[in-house]
Length: 381
Image: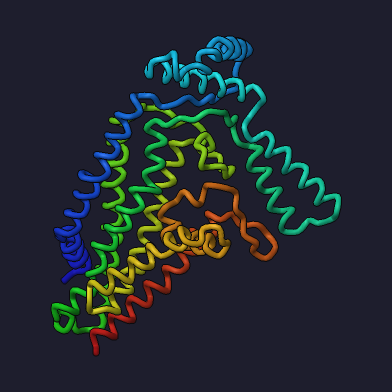
């Protein structure tokens, strides 16, 4: 059988697994979508307010006048206001507060000033090692950020960002486990490994076909989840916020010069890379095991254990480091952009996202090599 035909056959086997589509349907149509619809209806179409540019003098003056006007009503709102009026006043107060806070300048201004003081102090003391270089790197990255405003926006763009670290993480990880765990184990359990391909070249072709098919499977599943993410949130929530800076979302303070729309594209690529890397590990474990269930549970443990450890020992540095360099942390994506983190590599700061992505690629090389060796030797035995 030609390599391309063999890859197509392996891909067909992956997508013909009923368990994959049953799990997908349950998670998307019976859990994710109902909860999103409920959240959309409870918000009443209100997406919050974000002051994306420095306010004008007229905006500031108007906000002060409105806050002065509604302050007495807010103080006695529990007694004198209907629920609808109270909600309207609270939203107006949030908008005015965002405008007045923005009057003082960019939200990152205090952090920039503090970093400048640290850098000057270290330079004056002659301490120009790793800490000085890391602070300087953070300062230079932050200095080139656009205006970071105040307030919050919870429209479709933010919901799409949130999907990757919540539902997307769980569904994507589980689809990899369900789809790829049987890829070698099934051959062993059915006894087809003894007569499928007996030559050394044939065995290598089969492993290559399975690896290529698994990569395409992960790519397609990421694409399907992206369609679900975009279609559901654009139809349920306010369409906007894609041109806001990433730092407009409270969770993300790392000084990467990205808009929310650009960050969504970055999330897709990094989650895809993490999914492929994790898929390689599942393939290796499957090549060791005759039992699909054993492969599934061991792989699931590798995926879920870091998150469980963080839940139990969240404040411990070692627990956070374990999560930072796990497949779970990479597929979650959000950890890479929550705050500025640089690791000391020979005295120079290397940004955490660059380091963890590089390590994922490097680790995948011996994992793929081991998969070839294990399966080929398993065949001979």
